[in-house]
Length: 263
Length: 320
Ligand SMILES: Nc1ncnc2c1ncn2[C@@H]1O[C@H](COP(=O)(O)OP(=O)(O)OP(=O)(O)O)[C@@H](O)[C@H]1O
Ligand SMILES: [Mg+2]
Image 1 (cartoon, chains in turn orange, yellow):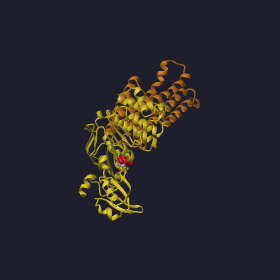
Image 2 (image 1 turned 120 degrees about the horizontal axis):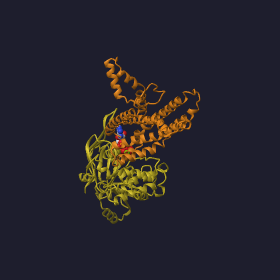
Image 3 (image 1 turned 180 degrees about the vertical axis):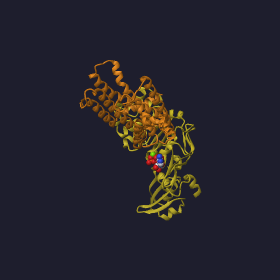
Image 4 (image 1 turned 60 degrees about the horizontal axis):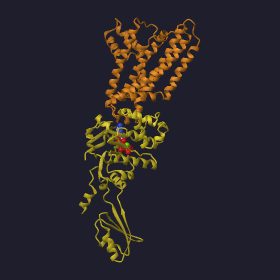
């Protein structure tokens, strides 16, 4: 356990110093700060649309950071031979991989927390209700995004155990788009009464294999205007468990591949 | 003495598009004794790093087996007792020397600030321990690498080209450190291209070429077979030939005649004979065999052709 923690901490230390990530983060924050100034929107819908826009910025920035951060993580360790000194110590490969993954998730959490703080601050300034509960409501969506990004990082780590970073970039990015945009489509296909059984089975398979990133696009009126959630807390809990389960499977599969691999 | 490292037909092959499977390490039988400094020599691409990585469980052998400190390779328990300095190593640049030791120490469960400082002092970095690795020179990075390799008080160290790319002063510092490891009772397995250095510090060596061990043994035995050159004046070549020294060569020089002969020959008899003939002895020069000669001979001599070589001592007996 201490090996995993040491590796994770070190990974965070490295990640928060990576210039590319900091630049992406800076751009994201910049957009967040100027977003309220874009007063092109009608006053009535302003807050709702602005909120959706800012959440969109957070989500997009986080996704780019998550992918850029994780696709290079394992390959870099191998290329720079830092992994050799680590694996020659009493560290198992699975501990190394989990440590790296946790480090990525911690780093993502830090960066997302920063962006969320900007979001909360902007709304808190102009909100009539400045209670803690109101703030709590505001961080719900970013929290769900965090689960989403953790899942995305697990996808990237899984692929990084056997494909090159650039391929991984498109693979993971593609999975994210597919899982965000098409998963709802396949879900409808699967659940629809009139669907042909073959199509239905196919949709079911796609649905199961493809990580359902759309789950977490809650409270974003731009992306999911029609999503209605009856029992909020239960829904959040369910999709969080879905995420954790999926992450677990990805990590175990990644470890199995990484264990056999030459480094 | 017990074996620190023992391999039996250890083999690693890689697929290549041109040549099918090539054995990068080919049926390697290594034997390293506890407490010795063992030099692992060979030209670029001979398979040295590949062998070390197999012994550390970083890559997996295609066939054969290997034992490190009596345990089969890959055994995690052994990793507590060994350490590794990779060739051209790289450390997390954002860390300071002290933080680096903390990080590697934590992987062993060692949280001992005094120990980190003592190790940095041992490698002469105590004044630079708060600088980040990115500010370290190559020599300093290599020394911090040696410091981290001592964290767990290892019984066996794998050093892959520890002096590669360093200046003469750094060379000497690292050489002295390695010698101190032996004094502390550690076994050191060192891969190197610095043959004069290896000659100074190693007890035994193996020379590997294209994945095959060509020579392995005590340095003193392998370097057996030096020559003695005697230059004399006032006598002619025929006189020296008449002495019938086995395996000798005689040729005329402007100043006299030069004869070289195996180092086992006692030069005193020849000197006496020359003097009795009223000749003069101009010089007697022992030409010790250098590791470099042995290396070049081993690597370039196609006659050896990958077959286990005949030790020079035996070869001479065959000649006699
Ligand atoms: N992953 C790999 N795939 C294919 N060939 C490899 C791989 N790793 C090493 N080799 C080949 O194995 C051979 C031995 O490499 P190795 O690094 O062990 O040599 P070395 O003796 O350490 O050389 P050097 O003195 O240059 O460090 C080389 O020909 C190299 O090209
Ligand atoms: Mg090498």
